[in-house]
Length: 210
Image (cartoon, rainbow, N blue to C red; front, top):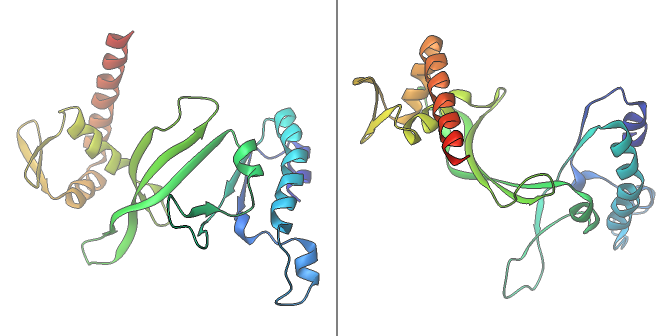
């Protein structure tokens, strides 16, 4: 299915969710409890060889979501390993290690609405690797833009932070990060203004470096 979609050149981005859930035909047709060692790894290896050339011709972005497992009997070193063998690691142009970082995000009523995540670029063929980024992911919405504005605003001294209080132009806007994010949600004009100032600060920093 994936190969046909890529070959059609009608789709720009394809997401396979997830590698761990891909089941070889022999495993589907076999009995529960049958030993099928290496089947998924061989499946992924064959798929990568076929898909790589097709992706290059059609410029389709192919995203694989994978899961972590733990090796049995590992006493030293990192026991974590991704499913599907090593072919995907080799063929991938970019690999991102995404993990939840810190407590879950809650709204004013105490309901969990998202997570703060830390992303490490484990491999990158198109830019420098091993960069790290942190941001909020809100359920049903995606990455929280206003959370990023607050964090970058503080980093570039555009938004003031004293203790748990956040301020702008000498005026306190909210107590606590979640409240500051909600304040920007309620005041989109201010969010746009801060975004513009942050972009100017980033561009100014890049011009200095060049």
